[in-house]
Length: 81
View 1 (cartoon, rainbow, N blue to C red):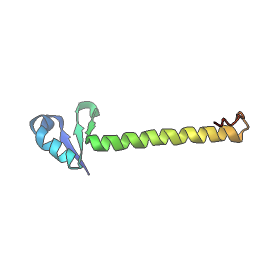
View 2 (cartoon, rainbow, N blue to C red):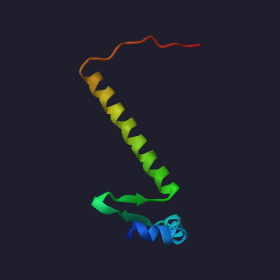
View 3 (cartoon, one colour):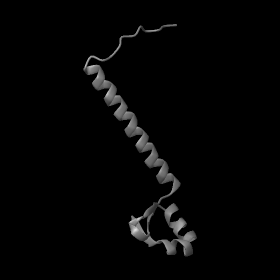
View 4 (cartoon, helix red, strand yellow):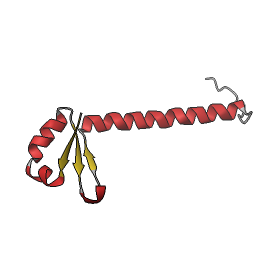
């Protein structure tokens, strides 16, 4: 759930809002000129970063696979100990 708060409310209710964010809420802090920010917990941030990295990794695999299908791969010898 996203809760919108004004920037001045964050200043005066910081501890309460932090507790709510740690509890799973997301805060949208509205600022002048529509320069808004979003506050999330560190746990949620870590999950978003993990998803971003996974997406980048899968995209790189797709790119390499497409290159192989176009015949752009290079054969390599298998190294055995």
